[in-house]
Image (cartoon, rainbow, N blue to C red; front, side, top):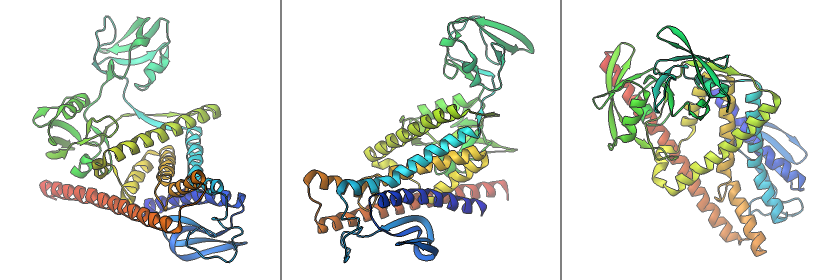
Length: 437
């Protein structure tokens, strides 16, 4: 119950910031705002400042701003202070201000998440696989103790301690003995492709909605075989999945004292076309790092830009391949499931999740669909280019089409949510029957 309440509060913050962006831009350009609502439906409570009714409404699944003269078919006695009386570029700016406010919020939250300190999970500094020829250097099962006298706690710290164009000293434990290795060219080694960490085939997280989730796989499940082929480590599992020509595979799973089998469908990753089932590897080491204000600004900026770019690439791939919508589109149930997973990891993960949703909200609102902010901006630019607005009839028809598109996407997202949830519950109930519970 607390998770649901927290998700509603977070959504309310995102919507409030979005509508506040519209509100401030409208007031700057002299447009009167009649209603500022968090939620839809009947008014629960609120207050009035000048001409604006600030309200909390019954259904907490969105929000809206009602500006004077905003609707093209609205009849008003006095055009002064109305939205439609404003110049086209002012109306476009007002429409853009909401999504832009979400971008600024995400940027601020990412900076805050770095400033308060971030924790991340990582691999043990234990060599699990070597993909290149190495002479008198590390071997499989070596434990990396230090690099250039800097103690190593996790795998990703190794390349950070290596110096370029210098002799590097690495201390390892091999067969119970400490050994000193020296090399002047190890900076050329990639510690995630040339030398790989020890990686048991144990599941860390199961992504909500994806095949492993629907099949009922869980965190800490160990994959011991796929289609009868023994799985010794994470790399074996990854290779079997990527090379498979089938639509589904039979996974042999160890969960505690139980060993059982599950049929798991394969899906194609939109980003790189690799086959996936929606799991991450269990990472045994948790590292906490603090960042200075300058570092927080730097990494907050990089993270914001990277996430915006990633989501636009994903959106392009979704549009270019509509068949992938079923696998990749989710609604409130999926968002809630993801928020629960974030809550388990700590405050920095919760903040990053809220920032990510804020960016997604920005991108979705900027789609050139009538009734969304992007649709309003599109109408404004049409007016700016052709020196006259679209006719009232055309605007109403396009808005109706936009509303149908939006309703379809919402219903489709809800259908996907419940399909994934139903599939997982069926799988888990089957497992309980097999276990005799």
